[in-house]
Length: 257
Image 1 (tube, rainbow, N blue to C red):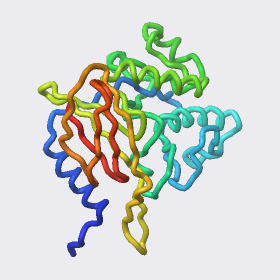
Image 2 (tube, helix red, strand yellow):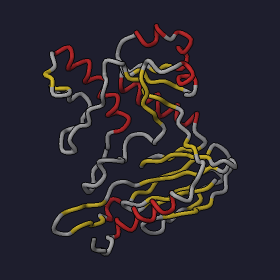
Image 3 (cartoon, one colour):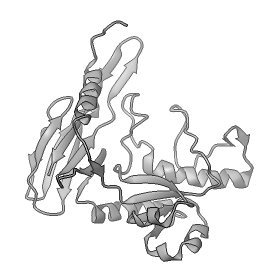
C-alpha cells in the first residue's frame, strides 16, 4: 500500500471517524418511523443518476416488470421514502449517500409486522401505504399513525410535528439530536453538499454550497461548539433561543447544549 496526501474532503471524513470513536453510549432522538408493508420486501435503491422526483415511478422492481397497479402501489411507497430522504438540492456529486433533504435525521424504517413494543417506542408512525389496512390492524395506535395518501399534507404535518417533539429545530441541511449516558445533549448539523469528485482533479470543494441555517431551541439555551469541520461555522446568537450558523460546504458541526 502507498500513503497518499488526503484531500480537504478526505481530512474532514478522517477527522469525523476518529472523533466518532470517542463518543460512546450516545443515542439519537428518533421520534418517527416509516412503516413499510411486508409486500415491499426490499428497498431497491435507485442509481444516483436516475431521476428521483416525486411521482416518477419505476417500471421494474427487483428486475420484475410491474403492472400499472403494481407501479402505482410500489411507486407510492417509494414516493414516501423520497419525500423523507431524497436530496432537494445538488451542488457537487458526493452527496448521494447522506443528503441535504427536506427533513432532519429523525426517521427510522420498520415493517408492519414489527412487535407492538417497537411501535410504542415512537411518537408517530408514517403509514407508507395509501390504504387503511395498517390502521385497522392497529386501532390502539390510531392517534400516532400518519397517513400518506396526500404527500403535500404529510410534508406540512411533519414539519409541524418535528418542531413539537424535538428540543430544537434547524431550518435547513441534515441534522440530528443525540443524548449521552450522562444526559448531555448534542446537535449535529451536516452540510453534505459541495464536494465535486473527478478523476482529473480529485476532490474539489464548491464554496457556493456554504449554507447559513437558523437554529431555534425550545427554551433559553447556552451552546458550546465542541467540534467544527471544514472551517469555522461562524455561529451568531440572535436571542436567548435562536442562533444562526454558517456550515461550510462538505462540513459539519457538533454543538453541545
